[in-house]
Each structure stands twice: as structure tokens, then as C-alpha cells.
Length: 95
Image 1 (cartoon, rainbow, N blue to C red):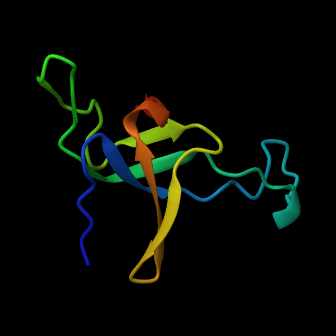
Image 2: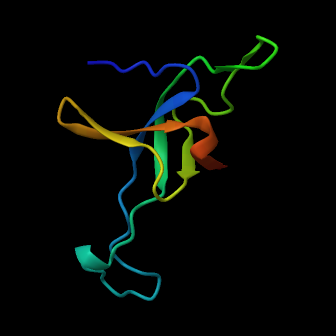
């Protein structure tokens, strides 16, 4: 199944949280923070401005992004977990 988000919504696949700190300490599942990094899977056509002009999203499929900690809606498609975000919930593109 393929997902096509509407308007300024973006479908992302959340990247796994790191299990080992920089100092080499292994983190148990209960100590891990919710991951905030994801890869963009699909992008909507963009939002419409007050003047009626289409504003295309700044991200594209394949981009790695950072998003707000409690942003988006979790969904399951074909046994895989995805997150649907609004473009305004994206904080940065990781290059």
C-alpha cells in the first residue's frame, strides 16, 4: 500500500534511537528517549496561502529531518510504523 499525504502533511519513518551513549554505556529500553530523527517517505502537495497560491514543502522524499518530540500521528501500514507530521512540526533537515 502506498500513502499520499494531503496538503502540508509529510509521512516519515522514524529512525531508531541509539542504544549506546558516546561514552559506551548501554541504555535499557526504559531509559531511551523518544527518537526525534526520521527519514521522509512521502510529501503532500503543500499548503495554500491566504492569497490562494500553493506553497510547496521544503522537504522531499529521502531527506533526513528532526521533528518535535511529541509531534505527529503514528500509523501502521503493511506492518511498518510511520508518522504523519505537518510541515510546521519539522525543525530541521539533517545534511
